[in-house]
Length: 231
Image (cartoon, rainbow, N blue to C red; front, side, top):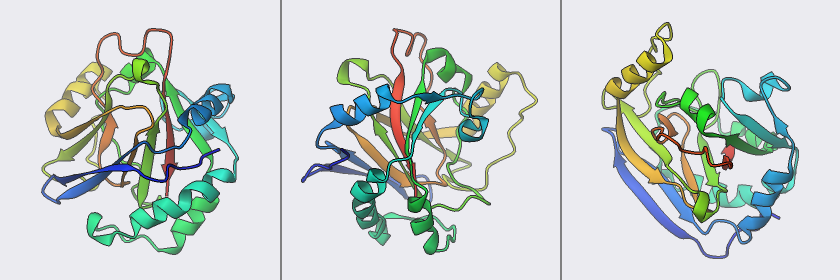
């Protein structure tokens, strides 16, 4: 399991924000994505009630399986992409040895959410890493089959910057007002469409979220499923 294709269809999305950030889109990522998808479906879900330490503020559930194959099969390829230094523009200084530390702690982790859960988290962009958390890159791999694919992932800027210190969110506002505030203050720089067996790689200080909530999205009896890695 987790074998990669011998050849990828790679697209570079560049020129994002005034920092000229980049995102890699890797299509046809897994050799056998059905296998990975089924692993996600068959694995028990961790929820805020059962595993609050693993869920944090994520609105859905998570698959969280200790599986050394994740590192063995995936790290060499992601290390190759990380080493393309001209692609990555973050000014954060993260000690290099933490790459190895993060991969040593890597699990088979998948976010599993439905429409109502996504609505609770809608249009509040976030960063996957900001001090004191120390990692440099993240990846999302879409595990929904073509007929299930809706939306995708959006990347944002705040006052033109994609990776500044997180602004103080007015969390005292009711959810609807907070979402409206986010829509007014964060600019959508790029929307990347969900596609089965598509992998995104981006720097962890870049603002992002699932694409804007659409009425009825993921209410048809299946979930949004994506594997995630923090490196």
